[in-house]
Amino acid sequence: MALINYLARIQFGPGVITTLPEELAQLGIKRPLLVTDQGLVRTPVLARVSAVLAELPTLSVFDRTPPNPTEEAVLEALAQFQAGQCDGLVAVGGGSPIDLAKSVSLLAAQGGKLADYVAEPGRPDRIGSRLFPLIAVPTTAGSGAEVGRASVITLNSGRKKPLVSLHLIPKTAICDPELTLGLPPALTAATGMDAITHCIETYLSPRDNPPADAIGLDGLRRAVRHIERATADGADIEARSEMMMAALQGGMTFQKGLGAIHALDNPLGELGLHHGTVNAILLPAVLRFNAPAAPSKYRTLRETIGLPEGADLSEWAAKLNDRLGIPAGLRALGVQRADLRRFAEEGLKDNAAATNPRPATAEDYEKILIESW
Image (cartoon, rainbow, N blue to C red; front, side):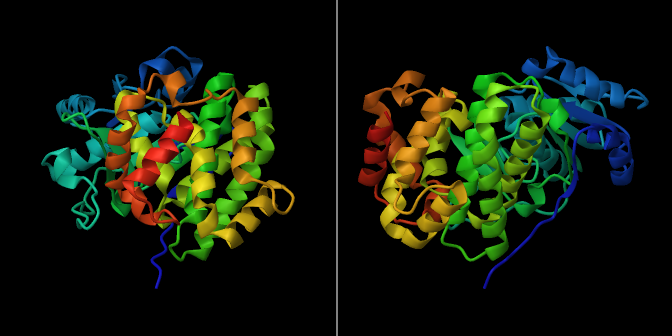
């Protein structure tokens, strides 16, 4: 038995940001809270989005989303949402503003604390269907948060935890690759590797969902063909479009589950590290660990990427990272060797660990981290 859901309305293509007013009207949103971050405030992207919304009588803007969204920032944005009597949200940016907006929508509609809704193994989904409508406008091509069912937040306890529910999927995603033109090479590479990791991990998940498998493989094919072009030339609209589609497809496959990379990335994210960069660094070691558990799927991955039969996927990922300028290991990001065991133990408790194709122990996770260090 398989539960298959694809619920978001998606506008895709160069220039589709102009559809934002009609999408707001369709959802009945008249007083949106626009959620973004300081990085975008300093770019023409936010000015372009704001210009599209110029006819709105009021527009409240929350621009203090941290690189890894925190409970403190969620509560700050929630207070602004309530003070402005807002009736919906528009999230503009990468995965961080989108995830933060999802949590604001949830708390504004259902109350309580974020800890009440955290997804944990064996814990039932406590998130109901009543949320304020959210439109996601991604400005990077990687997270897939615009169609994802998760909101990953660092709680006041210091723990980075996911809230997971189909109800958290934004009502509408406006995916305009023109908004990613000029994205710096390092960020293009890191977010692009995030998309590649999503497509690979969800395909390897043991859950049965053939549509998700097909979407993930198509997203992987697009990403591996275009990530180096997009990284080298910020103005290549074809490469940018293909990477945005790959990111979207990676997000559409999330419901099939992720794996060891994301299980380990979440505790590492408590250090404030960039999600896509950590995913890329962990990918070679996790591919090496999972190889004995999925030989048939590894053959399909090699065919999709364009590698010869018997090629080492782990080696391919490491070389791709090197060509893209991804940091060589976790040590380069400031991760301490003495903390790896703790991160391994925390990763084993993460929801994503349950859908890794090869069951793992804390010792296995520690070895993966050591190899990635």
